[in-house]
Length: 472
Image (cartoon, rainbow, N blue to C red; front, side, top):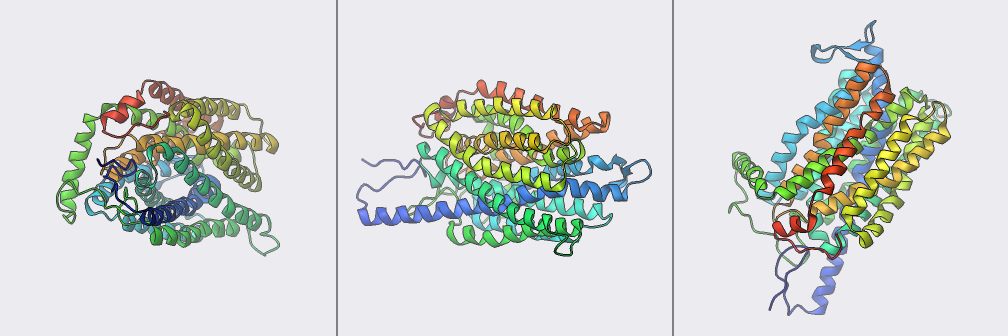
């Protein structure tokens, strides 16, 4: 009697010889390493560009272009220069919604997950390297490059998530996902160390601070492009496939149909998701709390520089601390999940986020030590909450639909994170205070916690026909 491989949902061969099993084990570890390095590669964009340098620098560029009242006028609109960066982030992720959904559908139909993932990665890397030319009052150029890079980043990461079910059995996914996040924070942190050294020594190198920032931005694109070569060489074309086994058959019958077929399939996918209301309930919870997480991450440097008066060096140091602590945080929460389950661990991390955000609101200005303490608190809950959310969702996906469902998941990740930046930007627009803007994000964590409590995870996994892990 055959058994079912929990990572691929495909039959195992009971007659497989030990040598073949050993070869498959080595191939699986090779694939896992390629997947880890993909996080290592793209984390440079998230850490160096979105989290540290671009927010304050693009805001300065926008202020250089502002009129006497402090407003800039992109597309004929009048907005405060201080709100330009969060509004641009919101605009970029709104566009990425459609791109992610369509690309995920195309990937599952054609089996070209790797080609699409790496292709978008290189588009994002090139746009990021183009940020070297962002100077003076060229805020429109900065906004355009941010839009392209952020869309490419979101699509590439969504496709990488689709590989998780084929890389680990159900009881191993929390650990594999946490290790991937740890690699990401290590890679992003290593580049930040180099960029911090460059920024601190820019005078000795004969560089202005603006030129140093532009080099740091471009370095993230170069890093992204270079290390994407590893997953390009080590991952299979189709996601959800373990070594020695073929991937799931194409439910549509033909894997090479044109884009209009993919659009029809996308409609069927979204319609079919209604048959799994518990999966959608989990997505609703994730939409809320991760929207708050993404906004804190993307706006932290802006809050630190504009409200708390932190120097650029202090901002880079704080984010570097987040990267380092998040490595341990991701691994620690992964171990906690082994004992208490992913859902309970995520709920605990959300309580930590609420406490952290409240402390951030009362944080005194011009006090780097307090700011560093806040960075450590963020790092402790950041990696684990995201890694466990990813692995938990992987159990809620019907077999063969990984890229499509993870594209919807990423809509609830970077895609719908337009809500947080929009609330953040509007709060500043109305009050002129970044403290009011940061505390307004509490609502996302509170609602996300309340909805996640209502999700019956075991029944949700059984409803999509997947094996249930021992510990939830």
